[in-house]
Length: 612
Image (cartoon, rainbow, N blue to C red; front, side, top):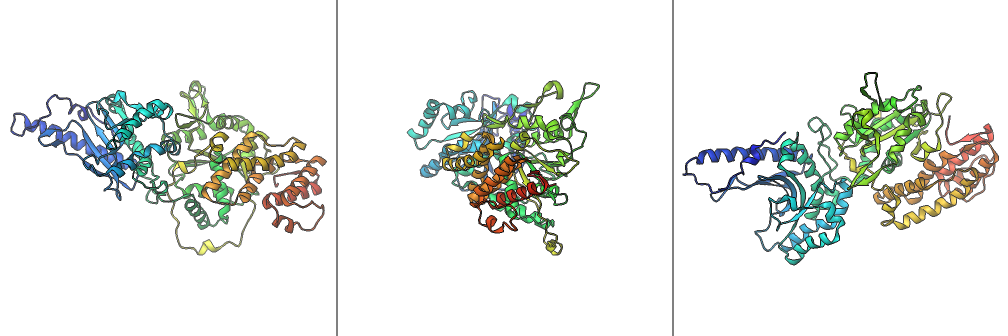
């Protein structure tokens, strides 16, 4: 929906006095009413585009006031349950610009000092908001109720507000000096921008979605109650919209995913689902290994489908890997003989993910080690490591350049790649470069007697989960250290003990592995999923043990040392059962895997993490 010039031109006048009995009054009335009606349609459409089920247009001021024409039109958007609160999300249009911003409209009631103080408290949460919503700080403006509405050139950018202490102090002084004042934050779109934008209702809807987090803060509503339904190009056809996750925490979401997968007849524990979720959040590249037929492909498909990402809406894609893939062109695309770029299967998904940054996209690389992963996937892995924050957004280096693809293409932060692998004579092993950059989750358990789902009549519907649920909160250890120093210290102490043994075969872990284990454990702790030892056990199993392989005495000594480290017992070769040692181990899953690897070394003369 485009905004036409008439929406701004109606305010281009010197005289705003309106008298019904003056010549030409009816024409002026028709002119204003038509622009006002159009404005109301735009506002309603933008709220719908925001994806929220709780927000509504509480009021749009009339086109005239006490015989005077309005110098601007403005609308108040509120939560259905918060209509009595003076805080709101406002949309306003004047001759110069269009604004979507956090506003206070209780200025006529001088008794609302505490409410106004609560409203202004959004300032204390703005840094958290930038991180939670992935806000582009350069796009947002900050100003007070004392600033003139038309002079948008003088608004302070959010970037300056957060980084320049002097500027921030001066602005905050406005509310400190007079408790009747308040601070606004939002986007101010110049007239020329609004007229040239192809779909302003969607642009406005995105801003409403972003501001809703702060709006709830300004009304005293806790974060978990914030509606997480951002705008989407698939809004009209997305069948999972009605099952929103607005009041669900991470535990609720995991419980839903687990129940959904169980209803499809696949027997995985809730801990399995938690582990997959935490692995994806830690790094958007995960490897699933195990014997054929254990449902590795299906668990990814049902996981994605349970949160609203399906093949139908294009947010889940299965890409079978071919044995003849030799470079990234098979996955990303190539320039043909006519010098035209032909998008590969992954690039097509990237292009869709770019259009819907608030929604998660999942790609399943099926049997990814049929070809050498380092040959066709190394470019993606390298670019994935360049993730960084710029103006509040997570960005990467260029994956495909303008010279190749016609424009610079980067890895979107809402894209998650999961690869399934089998280990047999037809597949290729992984290099440490690949293993360092992924959590390797093993699925080998099979419960053939799990037939209860055949008698289950209840249908589990997907729910709409947004990208912020999966998106990484930390990119560098420094991001975490300030808020959870103890966890970082505890993890480092444990890894140093393990590294002493790993150094014997030059398999010790580096900074990347340490950092990602810390991130995994912090996400786990924040959601109260698993005990620290249980979660750390997963990390050792997925990030450390896959690095170990070989046939000489050094590998045997290393595995024996790890067994003692994990269980507190000495490994006795040839023992019938190690069940007691494993059950009492500090890290039982890792201990069981070490026993398996030692037995294989004894019987075959060679061992590795992988079961073939």
